[in-house]
Image (cartoon, rainbow, N blue to C red; front, side):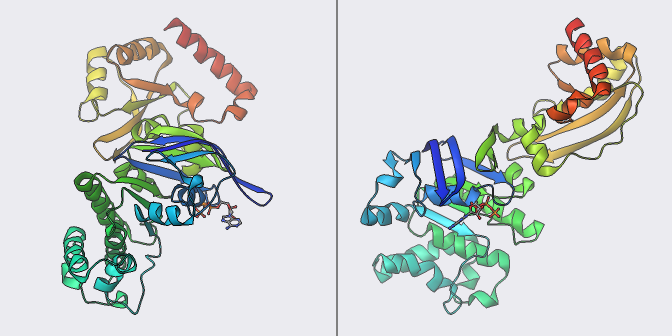
Length: 348
Ligand SMILES: Nc1ncnc2c1ncn2[C@@H]1O[C@H](COP(=O)(O)OP(=O)(O)OP(=O)(O)O)[C@@H](O)[C@H]1O
């Protein structure tokens, strides 16, 4: 378990992390996302003791990381594997030698090393590349070697810093599958820093969105992507939706329970009404497929539609209210629209 409380970190005058609070449960896959410079890598490096922090507490399996002396920190880091965007393999060494390196440093016997390396290449799917040099294998295979090396000391935690960012989407997907497999089979806690939303969705159970060194939003990944809070919208940008000016636009969220049910057409049939379907998207998550559909309904249908959705426990939102920044809601036009909608919500 990783428990971070009120953590603060500066580089000289520059405060890079402020009041970071988060808990990562044992055996979980946790995502850290944010713009460049938000502090993600620094936070990762605080977790494995490569960076110090001035204030707050960072406890990994009961150990306060900053309390460790050099020798204890070295022992501590043995239990934390790390992989990077650029793989960091030694080009003159073979795949075997790269994976064996940490064990050699810790003076494991040749027999122990040989057994472990062969187990690991099997696990990561590169048994046929054991004696190849890094220049002779693909980017995806290099990352597999790096993962095997990171697992060689049987770590409790694996930290992944943009591990799939330099790979093509298909290869990235296969590395994420491998990370999921490692998590399932070995029960290792995994922390992923990424800017790829697909990685967050397909690998992580919970995420934190960092903005300027602070956690702007944190929670279960499906919930955050469905709710699309401001911090997520800031990150991925608001889609340029061209919506009808007439009628009311609603976003209907298709949760795990609803994603394979014909919610929209059934509602139209049961209410004996028509409405426009303006768009929709479904996304694959670690354990589910979730999505949303945007519909346009007439004002007179609003009560029936929203009552129907509420009765069937379907989450919905007025798009006009949710997809503009709070700061921009002050405009006159929005006020008129909003007070109309607020009244409607009150009636409901
Ligand atoms: N060793 C250092 N000395 C001084 N400033 C640093 C150091 N490392 C990072 N920083 C600064 O800390 C801030 C956060 O950097 P960090 O690398 O943690 O961000 P990040 O979110 O991981 O960014 P990216 O996605 O671009 O890797 C940046 O402003 C960076 O310039």
